[in-house]
Image (cartoon, rainbow, N blue to C red; front, side, top):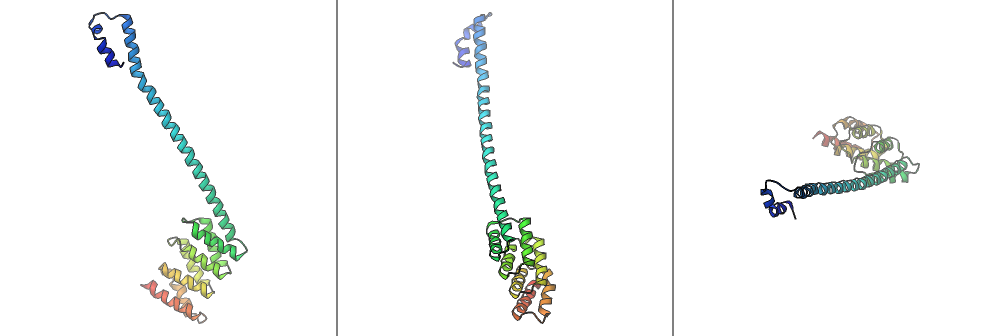
Amino acid sequence: MNLKEFIQENKHQFDDEKVSLDFDAKFERKLKAEFHQPKKKSKLIYLKIVSIAACLAIVFTVVFWQNNTSFTHQKNEILANLENESAGKRLEGVYNFSDDFKKEDEKIISSLLNLLHKDENTNVKIATIEALLKFPKNEKIRLNLIDALATEKDPLVQIKLIKSLSFLRENRAKKPLKEIINNSQTFPIVKSNATLAMAEIKQ
């Protein structure tokens, strides 16, 4: 019986000037039961919400930790390959970076730039240039590609650099391009690519 029904059932007792002590006690108990019950329910609901939130927090923490651990392991493996004495391993590191990394990573990019300037293997250098082009807006990468073009002697790598800077529409590459075009020792195919790149950059 709820409070409303209780009052209706005992309405005649409210009309009396004097209410018995027994009735008064019964009425007080009804009031307490009526008004305290929702608080208990609210407390239970609150506890359930807190428990669910705590469980979700634990799940997210575990997933984040696993992803972070996996990423760190993958990054360290790539860095180790990029610094390996074997050209095949260095090439593997470059390809793994190209396939797996969607965001820029300072350490890996620095290692790639080191390969760009110092590696003696043509295939490694060409793959490195391709990997660096994943981040065309990176100013550090752009400047290093220009610097590499000014010093590179391998014709295949020169062509790759020329095409890359042309693709980037890098206006600052005009100077090294002119030097390549005017150099009598430049291979004809390299010179023709440089001439074409100059025309595209000027547009």
